[in-house]
Length: 119
View 1 (cartoon, rainbow, N blue to C red):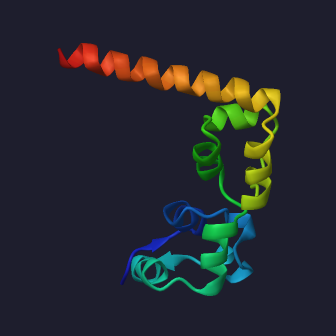
View 2 (cartoon, rainbow, N blue to C red; view 1 turned 90 degrees about the horizontal axis):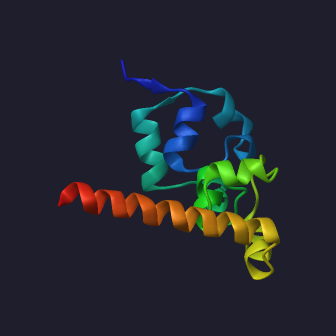
View 3 (cartoon, one colour; view 1 turned 60 degrees about the vertical axis):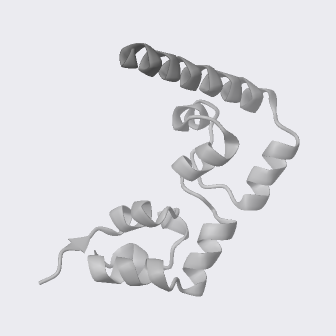
């Protein structure tokens, strides 16, 4: 018997926003073989979600250059589409600029600490 994954786990592994997936995917455990098949030959719905969204928080955070907590602090709790993210990046609100700067500083500090530990 093959190991199954909860839909939320499968969605995380695929990098998709679970509420935007088809109902059958959201309500059915997925085997590792099925997950591998979805990655190898994604159906149209999966390809659409991967390119157009809506995206899960970790993907949105990466695309916007902020942390997931930065999204939450500013009320972004639901998945945004590629068009919505592009609009935010084209004309960034003050919160986005502030969060990008904070995220950049945190990453720089982590890199500095790693360099210190390596020496």
